[in-house]
Length: 177
Image 1: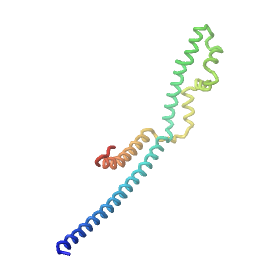
Image 2 (image 1 turned 90 degrees about the vertical axis):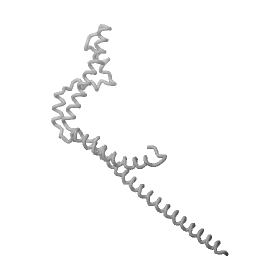
Image 3 (image 1 turned 60 degrees about the vertical axis):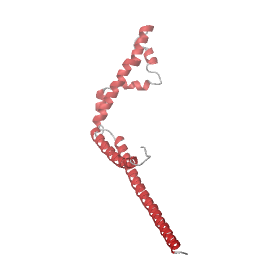
Image 4 (image 1 turned 30 degrees about the vertical axis):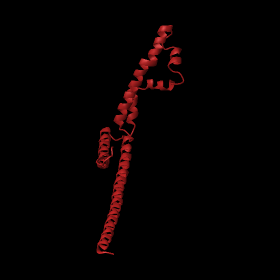
């Protein structure tokens, strides 16, 4: 074998070893980076899920007595207004057209039918009744302003956790998020 052939073989062997080392390094780096990204992603996902659970706990937490009182009064007023505009007005219209006696049996047949008669028991409840009932309750709720502030803080942390990964992914070629 000539010197030139020996040198050529030696260089080919060297080049092969360099490429082999390079490929091993690339595979090791890729595996390490993949594991790092997966760990970070899994940690972020776990934290986001925990924050979402905490947020839903606040969303489902009891309201204060004052909030309950306000909501109950509002709903009672709306129910009574809808009754005046709907079934009660229909009853009076029927009395007018058919010359029936207002507040007679046709009221009970038309308005207080078995399907929805129980709802009309609400007509007997006053706002004062609601106030007296609510006074008897413990004030166990979290005020709305406090609930909303905690939810906003949680959402901000969720956004920060998710935006880092999303921004990195958007910087990659051919990735659209």
